[in-house]
Image (cartoon, rainbow, N blue to C red; front, top):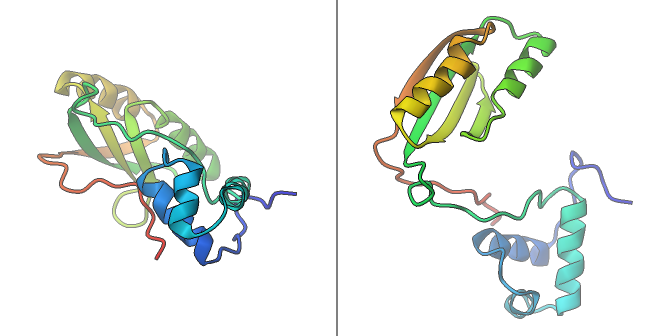
Length: 160
């Protein structure tokens, strides 16, 4: 039986090595992974399956360049909400689950949420901001930051 995603899975050095490699290139053939970590292909496959079932590996995706995909503008939006009851937060989180929102964090501090968005134009962002923030009855205020340069963008979780 697979462990629930919230529990901690016991990982050994081989698992950590596999995780480091697949985070950099998930298209590596099992044979190449096995060679790099000095295990059999079957052992690597079993370990990956166990980490997927245990919720350590949560997705296998391609990282897309937003500029080449026609979404060259990266926006960071800070959002403060009126109510933080469970129902209000659940509804607010759901309203932020749109394709343009690449990342959304519920945070501590002066704001309640920080969102990272990718859009094709400022016009697209204006329309999106109206829908997500201005028309949302739980949004008290929001602040927009436009990224001038994507200095470092990563998805790798440090595993060393």
